[in-house]
Image (cartoon, rainbow, N blue to C red):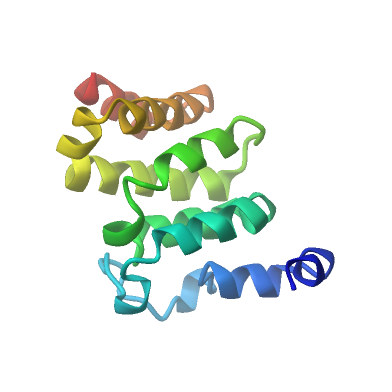
Length: 145
């Protein structure tokens, strides 16, 4: 099944897996951080991200920063920071990451400070954003460090 999905991976499938909808008609409350069907599914989404996330990383990041914030963050930060190493500038991705780091910082700051893995991953994501002159990342790095 995975091979079939890999061969036929299209934005439609990736949008379904990562719940990516049009910006104008998301269907989600902008402030929602939790969705019951995601409860306890960090491992499932990690596997999907590893298989398909690099093809549409912006959709995955939007999921993490919106309805997946409670279930996926901070656990998603290590795999996201590893994936960002190979990505070039993308305005949609930058916007999505800025939202993710802001929401992560304000809701999971203590968890990220206690765990070396989460702290390093969070800082790598901020550094990636800083490389593309993100004022949000500059400010959060100064506060976090």
